[in-house]
Image 1 (spheres, helix red, strand yellow):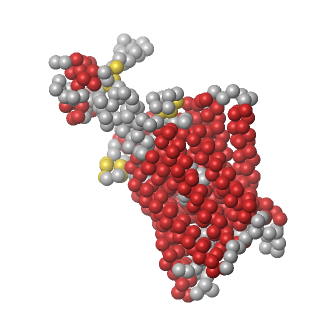
Image 2 (cartoon, helix red, strand yellow; image 1 turned 135 degrees about the vertical axis):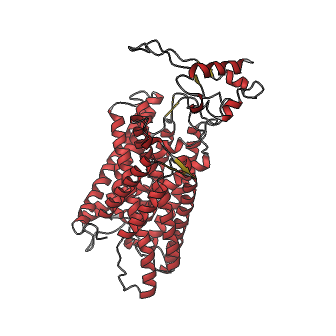
Image 3 (cartoon, one colour; image 1 turned 60 degrees about the vertical axis):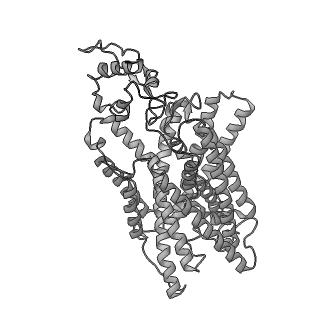
Length: 534
């Protein structure tokens, strides 16, 4: 028997009384048992994969002299021993530059693109495009800082941080971890609510488009959005049973294709309307103060416009979770993620500029807060239907992309608290779905709650602006900047430190102003709104 087989058998029998061979996640596999044969090509590499761990500290009780058993290491460099596991012992990640880009585009090119024409109408031809470019630059720059925080220490072999909170905990610690968690998960819940509202508006618009085409534009074609929210919720309950990011890559790709579809239709209709008008509408400073718009409303709407643009670029809150799907180095996950971020933000910015600017050019001060559902366009009605179907399909995928971190957080906590509970751990795999009683119960409850809240607050534009404003500074700017300063040991008071802090403070001011404008608009809308009447 050669060295590899001897060491493996020694480990197996010495460890068996604590961890039965057939239940061990690595040693229980048929592939591993086959590798114990002396003639197996993995035998030699396994000799280097067995590592000794220091004895456990002595403790009182009958087993006070027990020591920790040996464990098979699957850290970087031992891939020959277990190609099916990554350096942290988890199943191999298979994400690539393209799948990461698809996740980002799914998260970024969301329903927020449809409110950009309205946002530019509040700011005008000068400030509108400038604000979009500024937000694009800030988002792309801070995302590259955040991508470097996925691993602590060495960018290829350092300890992985699986979530945004893990990255904050590793780099900053203390109360900032709690602050990050509250902001991140509250924002993700808000996004789920906002997407439920947006999907129902699109489904309702499909019905109204057919009604307008049949009965004429004078017919109000009124209907409730409540049934559509319930339908969307039922679909999300089904897809929420997909366990994690690795299994929804295909859904992200479909959603990304849909986002390009409806953005392109909105762009084409804007161009057609502009040609029909005989020129561009709008002004350099946006909507003018007059009989329909007071000076106070102008201020609030201008501030809300910044929140809408910030929401349109919002994806930093799930960046680390997306990065955790990328396969192990080389190249490092941070390099792959930075490339994916640059491509995705550049692509979305082109679409945003075209859709927002052409929408404003087509409708000027009358730009609706949702370009495809506000019925600036009526014909061709079938093309509007195609666009709104694409929106709904995209939002089904985007909802999952944003909610997976919440699902994973709760389920990790539950598994840690009750490790032996069959209610939590027992699963039935059916294709991409992993069904367990706990997952089915908890995720269904989550989707149901977000659906009910969406029924209470069907204000698409206001909700979008508020979510973008509240999450932009802490998640997109503050934490990436602070972690970068700590990780790279940027000297306090240096030119780089001053520039980074100036960027952070400036974005804080913008976030506060945008949140104020959105809250003011929500309050105005609530004065005349009755719950569940939408």
